[in-house]
Length: 256
Image 1 (cartoon, helix red, strand yellow):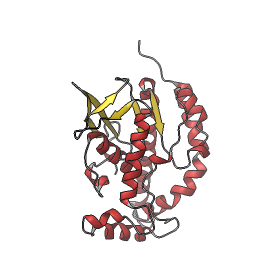
Image 2 (image 1 turned 135 degrees about the vertical axis):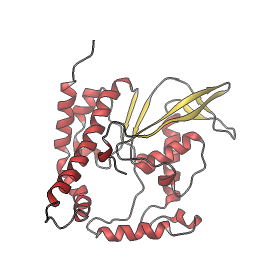
Image 3 (image 1 turned 30 degrees about the horizontal axis):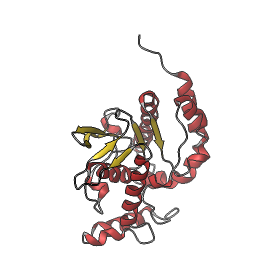
Image 4 (image 1 turned 45 degrees about the vertical axis):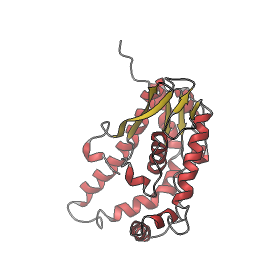
């Protein structure tokens, strides 16, 4: 028998969204305004359709992520959620409905960029263009006034190693990426930004870090990637079985 929609879970998700709306207005309002300037000056016959399409795609992306969490979380042993101001959103109702505990850890935070709130969008674009134009080794320094890429990669890898070790997933002391897993079959969900996810995937696969982790694994917004343990005679290694899956979104809603 196919179960009906989990209305209590959907209600909890709606409550969580409303609770966080004021925070989103303050934190993301500037980004939305900057994106809006790309749509034109608000006049002309195409202004309204462009604005409607932009916001409809944004809302649909957020909704798809929440629904994916609702329907997939039944099978997850651990749900690991990262939002910079998660506590202000009062996630209790949603987490209680999903049957998972609230877990917050700073190691999952995306790279700490300079404080650009209130600055023109062009300033950030120029800074990133300058970073991409540097020689390879110099890119490790990152953006002026922000966390260096080397520090960011080290933070994520150290945090991932500690997090996994607490759950019985430990890298063997050998050259090859062989891991020991005390509870095979357990599933862990990491919800984070593209840089954090890229570094973590590379760490699990045994890849050497680079100062362009965001470009090595191209991850779309609200995408799903999957890394699975592959049994070996003396342990396990990890296999990337899905990267940036966006099949839950229509093509015109997919962004990066």
